[in-house]
Length: 213
Image (cartoon, rainbow, N blue to C red; front, side, top):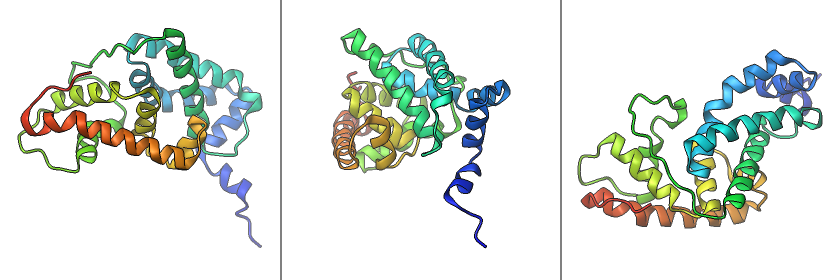
Protein backbone atom coordinates (compact mmCIF):
# COMPACT_ATOMS: atom_id res chain seq x y z
CA UNK A 1 0.00 0.00 0.00
CA UNK A 2 1.27 3.50 -0.86
CA UNK A 3 1.05 5.95 2.00
CA UNK A 4 2.88 8.94 0.50
CA UNK A 5 -0.15 10.80 -0.84
CA UNK A 6 0.16 14.47 -1.78
CA UNK A 7 -1.48 15.46 1.51
CA UNK A 8 0.88 13.27 3.53
CA UNK A 9 3.93 14.68 1.75
CA UNK A 10 2.78 18.21 2.55
CA UNK A 11 2.39 17.32 6.20
CA UNK A 12 6.04 16.20 6.24
CA UNK A 13 6.94 19.88 5.66
CA UNK A 14 7.66 21.34 9.11
CA UNK A 15 6.56 24.84 8.02
CA UNK A 16 3.18 23.54 6.89
CA UNK A 17 2.76 21.56 10.10
CA UNK A 18 3.55 24.65 12.15
CA UNK A 19 1.16 26.82 10.14
CA UNK A 20 -1.63 24.26 10.52
CA UNK A 21 -0.98 24.39 14.27
CA UNK A 22 -1.18 28.20 14.13
CA UNK A 23 -4.51 27.73 12.37
CA UNK A 24 -5.66 25.98 15.54
CA UNK A 25 -4.50 28.98 17.61
CA UNK A 26 -1.24 27.40 18.79
CA UNK A 27 0.77 30.44 19.97
CA UNK A 28 4.02 28.52 20.35
CA UNK A 29 3.85 27.35 16.73
CA UNK A 30 3.38 30.95 15.59
CA UNK A 31 6.37 32.04 17.63
CA UNK A 32 8.50 29.31 16.02
CA UNK A 33 7.52 30.45 12.54
CA UNK A 34 8.32 34.06 13.41
CA UNK A 35 11.74 33.15 14.79
CA UNK A 36 12.44 31.01 11.72
CA UNK A 37 11.54 33.68 9.14
CA UNK A 38 11.70 37.12 10.71
CA UNK A 39 15.28 37.81 9.55
CA UNK A 40 14.51 36.72 5.99
CA UNK A 41 11.33 38.80 5.84
CA UNK A 42 13.17 41.81 7.26
CA UNK A 43 15.98 41.45 4.71
CA UNK A 44 13.53 41.29 1.81
CA UNK A 45 11.53 44.26 3.07
CA UNK A 46 14.64 46.34 3.64
CA UNK A 47 15.61 45.92 0.00
CA UNK A 48 12.06 46.20 -1.33
CA UNK A 49 11.24 49.49 0.42
CA UNK A 50 14.79 50.82 0.84
CA UNK A 51 14.53 51.87 4.49
CA UNK A 52 15.55 49.83 7.52
CA UNK A 53 13.18 51.45 10.03
CA UNK A 54 10.22 51.13 7.68
CA UNK A 55 11.16 47.50 7.00
CA UNK A 56 11.12 46.69 10.72
CA UNK A 57 7.62 48.13 11.06
CA UNK A 58 6.45 46.29 7.95
CA UNK A 59 7.89 42.97 9.17
CA UNK A 60 5.59 43.22 12.18
CA UNK A 61 2.71 43.96 9.81
CA UNK A 62 3.55 40.88 7.72
CA UNK A 63 3.38 38.51 10.68
CA UNK A 64 0.26 40.22 11.97
CA UNK A 65 -1.36 39.50 8.60
CA UNK A 66 -0.14 35.92 8.73
CA UNK A 67 -1.85 35.47 12.08
CA UNK A 68 -5.05 37.18 10.97
CA UNK A 69 -5.20 35.04 7.81
CA UNK A 70 -4.46 31.78 9.64
CA UNK A 71 -8.03 30.43 9.35
CA UNK A 72 -7.95 30.84 5.56
CA UNK A 73 -4.55 29.19 5.10
CA UNK A 74 -4.48 26.23 2.71
CA UNK A 75 -1.33 24.07 2.39
CA UNK A 76 -1.42 24.16 -1.40
CA UNK A 77 2.13 25.46 -1.88
CA UNK A 78 5.28 26.04 0.13
CA UNK A 79 4.69 28.09 3.26
CA UNK A 80 7.39 30.52 2.15
CA UNK A 81 5.55 31.20 -1.11
CA UNK A 82 2.46 32.17 0.89
CA UNK A 83 4.53 34.18 3.39
CA UNK A 84 6.45 36.08 0.70
CA UNK A 85 3.23 36.83 -1.18
CA UNK A 86 2.05 38.64 1.94
CA UNK A 87 5.48 40.28 2.28
CA UNK A 88 5.42 41.45 -1.33
CA UNK A 89 1.91 42.89 -1.02
CA UNK A 90 2.80 44.78 2.17
CA UNK A 91 5.89 46.25 0.48
CA UNK A 92 3.99 47.23 -2.67
CA UNK A 93 1.25 48.93 -0.65
CA UNK A 94 3.90 50.98 1.14
CA UNK A 95 5.64 51.97 -2.10
CA UNK A 96 2.36 52.95 -3.75
CA UNK A 97 1.50 55.12 -0.76
CA UNK A 98 4.92 56.71 -0.83
CA UNK A 99 4.73 57.66 -4.52
CA UNK A 100 8.43 58.20 -4.82
CA UNK A 101 11.66 56.26 -5.29
CA UNK A 102 12.75 54.60 -2.03
CA UNK A 103 15.60 56.07 -0.08
CA UNK A 104 18.32 53.49 0.52
CA UNK A 105 20.01 53.21 3.90
CA UNK A 106 23.14 51.16 3.42
CA UNK A 107 24.39 48.84 6.13
CA UNK A 108 27.76 49.94 7.44
CA UNK A 109 28.45 47.44 10.21
CA UNK A 110 30.36 44.29 9.41
CA UNK A 111 28.90 42.79 12.59
CA UNK A 112 25.32 43.15 11.42
CA UNK A 113 23.39 39.89 11.72
CA UNK A 114 22.25 38.52 8.38
CA UNK A 115 20.35 35.35 7.40
CA UNK A 116 22.70 32.48 6.53
CA UNK A 117 21.59 32.40 2.91
CA UNK A 118 22.60 36.07 2.50
CA UNK A 119 26.21 35.62 3.64
CA UNK A 120 27.54 35.41 0.10
CA UNK A 121 24.58 37.08 -1.57
CA UNK A 122 26.45 40.18 -2.70
CA UNK A 123 29.46 38.33 -4.08
CA UNK A 124 27.29 35.77 -5.87
CA UNK A 125 25.06 38.42 -7.35
CA UNK A 126 27.86 40.63 -8.57
CA UNK A 127 29.47 37.70 -10.37
CA UNK A 128 26.22 36.29 -11.71
CA UNK A 129 25.09 39.64 -13.05
CA UNK A 130 28.36 40.33 -14.84
CA UNK A 131 29.41 36.88 -15.99
CA UNK A 132 33.01 37.89 -15.33
CA UNK A 133 35.64 37.65 -12.62
CA UNK A 134 36.67 41.01 -11.10
CA UNK A 135 40.05 42.27 -12.28
CA UNK A 136 40.83 43.89 -8.92
CA UNK A 137 40.63 42.94 -5.26
CA UNK A 138 37.17 43.69 -3.90
CA UNK A 139 36.34 44.72 -0.34
CA UNK A 140 33.38 42.71 0.99
CA UNK A 141 31.67 45.63 2.74
CA UNK A 142 32.13 47.80 -0.33
CA UNK A 143 30.71 45.04 -2.53
CA UNK A 144 27.65 44.83 -0.28
CA UNK A 145 27.10 48.58 -0.51
CA UNK A 146 27.53 48.70 -4.29
CA UNK A 147 25.19 45.75 -4.82
CA UNK A 148 22.57 47.36 -2.58
CA UNK A 149 22.80 50.56 -4.62
CA UNK A 150 22.51 48.63 -7.88
CA UNK A 151 19.48 46.71 -6.59
CA UNK A 152 17.86 49.92 -5.31
CA UNK A 153 18.27 51.47 -8.77
CA UNK A 154 16.14 48.73 -10.33
CA UNK A 155 12.42 49.15 -10.85
CA UNK A 156 10.17 47.79 -8.11
CA UNK A 157 9.25 44.55 -9.91
CA UNK A 158 12.79 43.85 -11.15
CA UNK A 159 14.15 44.40 -7.66
CA UNK A 160 11.59 42.04 -6.12
CA UNK A 161 12.19 39.31 -8.72
CA UNK A 162 15.97 39.42 -8.20
CA UNK A 163 15.59 39.20 -4.43
CA UNK A 164 13.22 36.24 -4.56
CA UNK A 165 15.33 34.43 -7.17
CA UNK A 166 18.90 35.11 -5.98
CA UNK A 167 18.32 35.42 -2.23
CA UNK A 168 15.46 32.96 -1.63
CA UNK A 169 16.21 30.62 -4.54
CA UNK A 170 12.61 30.71 -5.72
CA UNK A 171 11.69 29.18 -9.07
CA UNK A 172 10.00 31.12 -11.87
CA UNK A 173 6.72 29.45 -10.94
CA UNK A 174 7.02 30.37 -7.26
CA UNK A 175 7.96 33.97 -8.06
CA UNK A 176 5.01 34.11 -10.46
CA UNK A 177 2.70 33.10 -7.61
CA UNK A 178 4.24 35.63 -5.22
CA UNK A 179 4.13 38.52 -7.72
CA UNK A 180 0.92 37.46 -9.49
CA UNK A 181 2.57 37.11 -12.89
CA UNK A 182 3.12 34.32 -15.40
CA UNK A 183 6.36 32.30 -15.22
CA UNK A 184 7.32 33.59 -18.67
CA UNK A 185 6.83 37.18 -17.53
CA UNK A 186 9.04 36.47 -14.51
CA UNK A 187 11.73 35.03 -16.78
CA UNK A 188 11.68 38.18 -18.93
CA UNK A 189 11.69 40.40 -15.83
CA UNK A 190 14.74 38.62 -14.40
CA UNK A 191 16.54 38.85 -17.73
CA UNK A 192 16.05 42.64 -17.82
CA UNK A 193 17.04 42.93 -14.16
CA UNK A 194 20.29 41.02 -14.74
CA UNK A 195 21.16 43.22 -17.71
CA UNK A 196 20.54 46.35 -15.66
CA UNK A 197 22.61 45.02 -12.76
CA UNK A 198 25.43 44.11 -15.12
CA UNK A 199 25.42 47.62 -16.58
CA UNK A 200 25.43 49.16 -13.09
CA UNK A 201 28.13 46.92 -11.63
CA UNK A 202 30.54 46.41 -14.51
CA UNK A 203 32.35 49.72 -14.07
CA UNK A 204 32.73 49.09 -10.36
CA UNK A 205 34.09 45.58 -10.82
CA UNK A 206 36.64 46.49 -13.44
CA UNK A 207 37.66 50.04 -12.56
CA UNK A 208 36.29 50.85 -9.10
CA UNK A 209 33.70 53.26 -10.47
CA UNK A 210 31.04 53.85 -7.83
CA UNK A 211 27.51 52.67 -8.54
CA UNK A 212 24.89 55.38 -8.76
CA UNK A 213 21.84 54.52 -6.65
